[in-house]
Length: 336
Ligand code: TYM
Image (cartoon, rainbow, N blue to C red; front, side, top):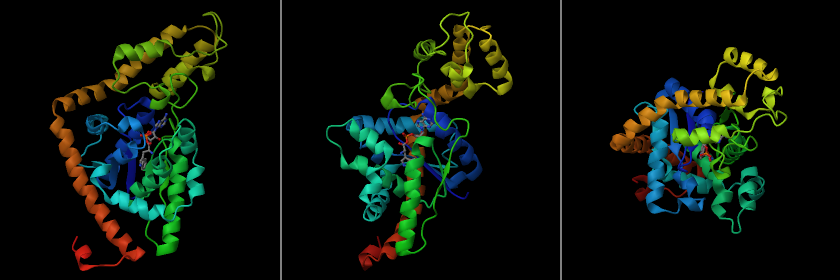
């Protein structure tokens, strides 16, 4: 592993799925690799969703996403943290890769099919979404990509895109590897059914107001077979236990599961425990977020410095790519 890249959408709220599936690894890999850990707030990607069509909100959400990543422990003086739109080379590479990518490969992406099936008019950007993602990763020649399992198919396509470019123009890009958090590759939503996701409205926000978090935890579905308090339960079917497993070590969790199987413990008590653990876990992030909110210049300066550092790498890759593709090298261009 020599260089890590990942991206996160500025969709307004960072939830437990984003945090456990991706951000935990951003922080760990950032500590190990410093400036070779590159993290991007993907505001170009966000434009494929009409909620981003708001001039004020887009910038505010980019700020918010950067702030939460910093509050979660990313040190922007060490890693590179930047907004995607501050590196326009991304869209240039995206076009070059688009030119070679089979339409059928894009049409069979499950996220595309899912999102497109809910829309009356499908923006072409939604289809192109994974090529833009490939451009992100390849522009920095990253070999490791920490993401949740939902991005695995996009990453496989990135590998194919890299391979195709290398075959056509000569060895240029490494084929990046997926890097999952084995404890939480796919965090389930509070409905206990689908993946936790903003669009499903089933999230627990990392900075969500505690009263609202408790309201959601209180309503988490229990083992459906457990109707009365005196009925034994199966912890494997309980969403409450699933969430508890993210916060408690096995030596604390195992005796609780045994009690649950014998109907020796009530669900409300487990939910109160989960709420406490959630607060304990998110407390330091909330504190740092509050401090950063009072010092917004820290976040803007981080994004500014990150943009400069990212762009330097991006320019150097694009010089190589343009040369390999064979664009005319006019003197004006060369002096860009
Ligand atoms: P986004 O913004 O939807 O999600 C950010 C990260 O959170 C992970 N994630 C989850 N992990 C586990 N369980 C969940 N319920 C869950 N929900 C979200 C996602 O897998 C992701 O890692 N396409 C990307 C953004 C992107 C990107 C990139 C990622 C753009 N360019 C280049 C990596 C490399 C996305 O929409 O993430």
